[in-house]
Length: 177
Image (tube, rainbow, N blue to C red; front, side):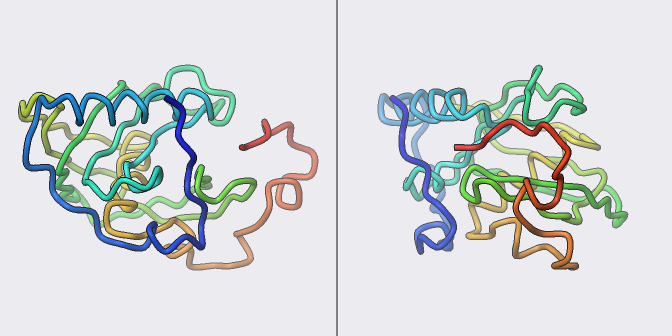
């Protein structure tokens, strides 16, 4: 089922999400299906459970060919529950980010360039990967939602934050929901 995505300003997006304690349950499977349906409908790169009003530490992400990210490398479809992030370098990369909870806008956001993430899948199997580039950016962005952080909170230079049509007047960015 496609769920409503909360938008910036909704206080539920600012709360720290709770750990998932039970895996392989019908409730978790239903949540993940709703998240997949919602993300696919909105052509997103990822979605965190708090974005649809569920205060659990659950994110999904994955990018194949995506009109919102035409130059992005592929990121495997992933379910990541109770994630832990560990930077592999203190080097930061800045790039443009958007968010389904901040529709129609982009911002220039610093993120660790390389990191290791770990957590569990929906059945409670351990997952661990070392990643860089766009994959690392997507994971950090989605996991921020679990701690009540939206990407505008990370922007250092507010002149690089604004509406898509003002920032990129000649670009053919697809409309966001």
